[in-house]
Length: 316
Image (tube, rainbow, N blue to C red; front, top):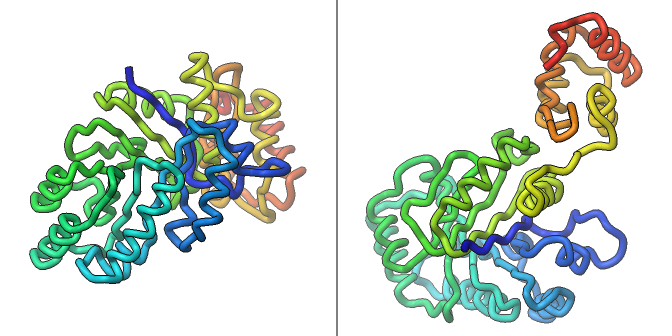
């Protein structure tokens, strides 16, 4: 049976009082350390992360961008220093996976491929697995030379399965970073989409799957998938149903004045509780509203309430 770990990219925005990491680790089973992609955390800080979490809580570490973006995985002293530092962090955290992300501008020229081969053949991973996210070849078949490098070094192909991406080859570990289908990571998953994510995980053939949500509602998305896997049902996202649930979502942060197009762009990506065990995307309702300007929340609410009571086309 596949072991499934569900978490998010970091704990900094886990909105609870007290120790965020400690509370997070009691809610989720894994976390991707995003901080290490931008900064070099001190070893003392890293040790404190490990002390504040249960022994079975799993960290994965993002390799600092210097290695992939600045030194471009070249076999030079600076690359080895960065890699060694990251491996040390993994060791302290007892992390099995070091995630490397190469940018969309990363070109796999013959010369660069040779350099990467030399670098990977000369580093000591100390049994740490690499998960490589190759943004320059997203949704494309992997360059044959790159495929061979990854396969020969047993590197996990890191993809976003929610976007239809699939690993280039089967592996014992599935590592996926979920950003959604919106602009950047501005997205919230529907029940149907999370069910599809779960199906792909179960059918992956891997012995272990690590799922890290990176959407703006990452904690809620991760929690919903976790509850679904445990109970077979998805939890509510608001405290009400139908129009009241929609209004609850719109009241969160809608900026006025606004219009229909802006509402679809700024609020349409969210979901609300249409009925018990049935979520809908906000855009499905907003697109049915009159094409006019809305000067404040009360104005918008009045139009929604009036239109919903008079128009049969408003029903979803």
